[in-house]
Image: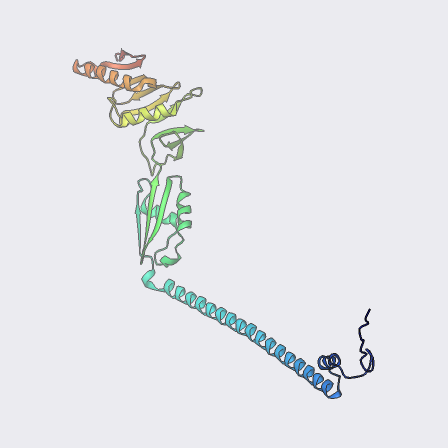
Length: 306
């Protein structure tokens, strides 16, 4: 058996001799020198100085932006104040101008209240600025009158005011607590009867136990107004509601009472017209003192001889 020849490197494996491995270590791990340390220290100081300078510049820029916004806000507020002040002066100049002074008040729709009464109720003063006229207050003052049901007030530039009213129409006289009142077509009191504003109307009397059918009664009243009956409200001296749909009217000029069942007022109206015309044709109408129309029949009673 042969034995291979072993060569031993001079100096051994751990010897100080030259080798490629040692050269590579020295290349990647250079030894520290004082000159290199000083240079690194100077670089760190310069970097810190640059960072501090950049921070101060950013702070100054931020403060400048805030100051610019503050200046803009102040300028806007000053501008708004100037505009508002200018508008106040313009408004005062307009309200003081004679061109906008109220010189004409147009009133329409009134029948019971005079123009002078409505002008006094409105509180409008001739010569005051039309721009200072409060339409809402005028409307509220007009509605305080029991005669005024609704009112519309508007400006007519440059110097006019229009007042349009809808008045409550007096339809009856009614008596409450011994006082005679004007009342509307539903029997609601308006104002007491006055000599200075006297209107002759039929008196409305409702029996205490009577519960009138308001809808039927209104339908019949409209039919009388349309002359669907042989008499009108101008001929009625009084109207008495005795039961829900039973009424009695007194025709003063003829001295005649007429009792009617209004539950079928159309049929009874046609029947009354036929009998009325028949009595007139025969010349007997003036002799009648009372008529009753009930259940589709007509009863006639002669006037008592004097």
